[in-house]
Amino acid sequence: QVQLVESGGGLVQSGGSLRLSCAASERIIRVNTMGWYRQAPGKSRELVAAITRIGYTDHVDSVKGRFTISRDNADNFLYLRMNSLKPEDTAVYYCNTVPPLKLRGSDYWGQGTQVTVSS
Image 1 (cartoon, rainbow, N blue to C red):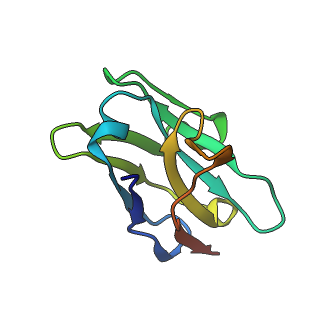
Image 2: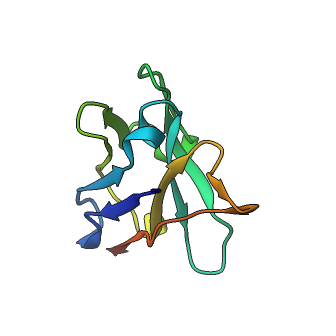
């Protein structure tokens, strides 16, 4: 069974913080590079942070120094700590493998979690 369940989003003021969580199926999170993606209104989905199975991380330039991706392989969770949030961080955030999972030929996505940053 495939499980990618995101949570932790919400409405926050500019400069605030949030921590996103992703509950993933064990067989997915333990063997794959995982990532957080986001999709802002009218824009394409983008990968903002990734973490390998053994913990190497990378973050897109626009979030470097503000966001931190981490994982807990024992409990099958992926996290994204977001500090110093800006209005341009407003988006629906998704967790997935890197590249995204495919089921029956199409990318599989969870429901995502909405992050809204007010100015």
